[in-house]
Length: 571
Image (cartoon, rainbow, N blue to C red):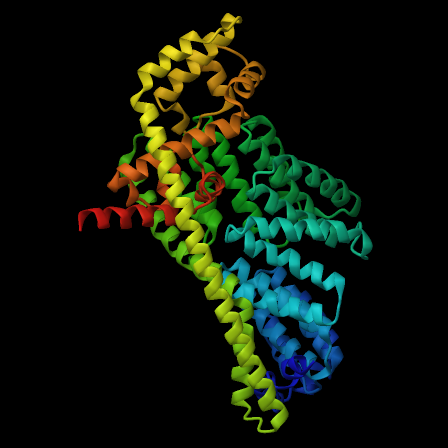
């Protein structure tokens, strides 16, 4: 309880002082006709951008700081969020937060911090977004408000999935889906927004059946509610699924449906939908070797972006796809230009990404430390507070020891995993040396079905030529090369390889990359993104996920251990 007393009363001291200083600048009552906050917000929403300034000044300097004013600050903040004017949005939300803390109106605080987090997320500042969401979640939990917890958690999983914390994001998503029917969100626009957010997680985790299932539910609900933004988002997600599963005709169908809505209706927050539509339409054309059409779609995005958009992942990916298009067209000068731009933008993005991953693991400890610093800065001298500070210090110390202990335990576990992995790699290399003998053994297998024998020989040939490293390696392409159909090939792989097609390809790729990283120093110097592309993965996230599933280790850890092992051998 004491924690929240400080949250509501200690933290806003300086903000309140600043607010009162601003309030001394009274609005001209004759000019604005003694407008109420609600009337000022209505005027702001109706006015042109040039006309808004005087109404905004009137609202910002409104003399009565009460609940009605806080509600209007939140309302106008939402308005500017819809206009993608995030700086103004945050300015009004901060005003709402100051008043709400004084009045202990937790819902306004929670909504304001959640929207602030959305602003930061849209601007690519993942760390600030995470901070804002954690504050909102703390407030919602302290008041045991289930619906606010759901809203904040649905936003929090956006940051988690950006940081490749997919297990955590899926866990939160599943809890939200179980609880939504118990809330007033059921069958509302908020229900659709939650479904679209959860679908982002399943897309990143490549759970495509789940994406299509929840997209269909969301589309039906969006049509019933006439919710265009929800329809656009879910059509794009269906298009993305069909792109990833190489069903390009279906991908075009849903992406163009989304584009048609954007062109014909007034949709809020158009940047990300338009950018994603252009990117995946371009990707479909690229996969069909229609490079000029792909470039035309990418130009739509890259010709219209501003400097502040360059740290957004769809824009970064568009640079890489543009480089690949010109590479396929043999225009090496342009390919190199766009590739260098991509590397520059991606490097900066990865730096910010690493900072936020660290933030996820240290958030709880930092909140405790901040509380201690706040207590110190206010110089509260009574014995009760000193005891509280001492308790907090002890808790932080114990938490630190616990974190260090777990870190060392994890390091020992990783070392054991690495040693086991090295033994497995040695076995794989011995098998390669005995390849001739293995081929003789294969010949001795009794296979009644001649066609099966031909397919297995075809698979062995493709394995030998490392066809599995190509990004266009798929069940369909291998079926063509082994002169069979996808259904028959899938059954053969299941029966004779003991796994499904995706597991079969991923195992070949990971076995290959383990050996190559062990033996090729130059390859180890590549970025994780470049290594992923080299062995056929479309993203570093997908590569990392499959590498860890196979080995229990992150690729970066494995590379560092190999480098360390070689340094020891050379010394």
